[in-house]
Length: 230
Image (cartoon, rainbow, N blue to C red):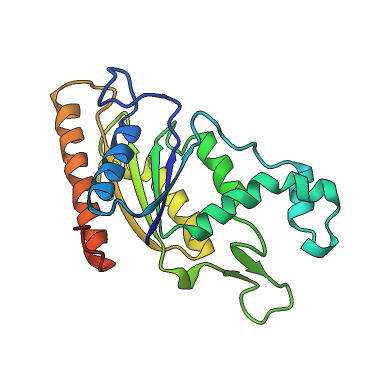
């Protein structure tokens, strides 16, 4: 059985498939999940709505607790890290992580960044040893064959590699960097553009992104040798 972790980071609670001012990324994550379930209804799915229920940002107490050895943590430290531990457990258990990730002012939403900060954890998703020869940091999830699927949306256009404002896209780059740091480097990505134009270019971009989602689903099913359910 494959386990999917589906994250929605948009502040908009509805999908643009059903609401005029809804979220394009929620539209794409719902499409991914619908197509995956059609092929693999038996697979486990964990859903997190970071846009509506974001984890708290890290605090001084969180940092103190995270960098204290587990056997030395006081009860308040374990309590401080309880949600972070659940989020890390979900990442570790997932084979495929699907993130609906809109661009807010050239970067990811604060809600998603708070989630990233909670799951990039010393001793759990990356290792650190200041006495280690060479690189003192190393990823802990490298051998787990995980895939990250980034489903984005942008108000302007030309943010993809080679595009007119690609250098201003700090969404995919920062997210890929954080996931590579913990050992997840297999990444698929597609995004809707032209949201602020709200014309035929947006409609065409949505259609193209939806086709891209369908292709990603089929590609992952083939790559992982997962036959559709009979």
